Length: 423
Image 1 (tube, rainbow, N blue to C red):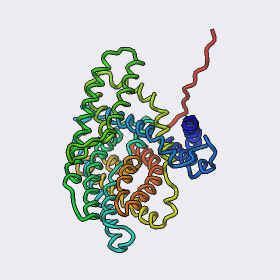
Image 2 (cartoon, rainbow, N blue to C red):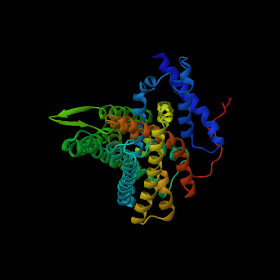
Image 3 (spheres, rainbow, N blue to C red):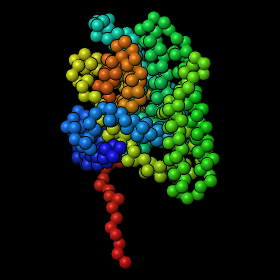
Image 4 (spheres, rainbow, N blue to C red):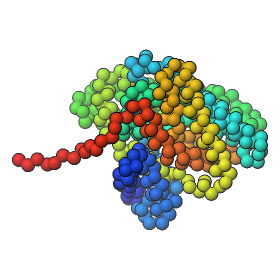
């Protein structure tokens, strides 16, 4: 246990120190945290086998999954707080159309490209693997996007629309993956399950929304009994932790497997809370400050989880490059088409798709499920390769797009240091 604490300390210090270096190159801090994870991971310093100097094995990194799941819960809770009624009235319908359309277009584009690869080289990739990767391609990483927005205090029409689209994208991606994976399983085993393809995905979304809504209402009710800022922040943190824990529960109702989506549950909790609590904005500012170390750990651990062994497989790299190109085209042109359909301004139309490129935790979770297919190992490795690329370049591209539309203020040197004042 003491080695885990030492590793966590090394992750925080390493990520922060490396962020000073990336600042010289005007790169987002999230890129530094990911690179720090790679350096401290089991394929770099961790390979030396020295206890406390990095993560010595992937098993050790996976043992910290509770930290990354908790961080993801707080990130989703924060994104849910962007779904205020005033913003939904202004751009809610446009965000829903864009969120759905760009995800579907991305899935179709990746499906066409990878199925085409199967037709040309049947031994390289199977159709079940191709359509599963197509669905995984729809997912966008909310964590990297949120960290870039926070770091540079981005604000404006593109930023507000992006936060809504990212949240909707996760729900759509979950549904697309569930259906595609059900079809892929049917093609692999020769039988289709209506429960797996239709009932369970819809039930997962509905259960997540109900649980999240109930937790948001309960948080608002309990929070009213406390008046000091510290206690109100504490009860908010406690409720997010409770929500993350409840969202991990699984159970069966007859033959139906019931589970929750952590992202959807926590997003819904934040959405309900921010719309019924008059002081939610002030409270969220305090929670955000408390969760900063947790967010840094999330990205450092995510970087350490990236398996560099996938780079040793030529087939993985071939399929991975095609996947990245097809997904990037689908996101960019899908967002452009949907923005045109909803009559967005030209700066938003030209830049929204680029901000949707980051991909990480949600896609990796889907890839673990896809690994149960007969050739699921290829799907998992392709996603690992794509995440490695997207997480290193995606945040910088997001920053560039937000700069292009003028929603990031010019960077200046600021310091929170305050000298002790003698009497």
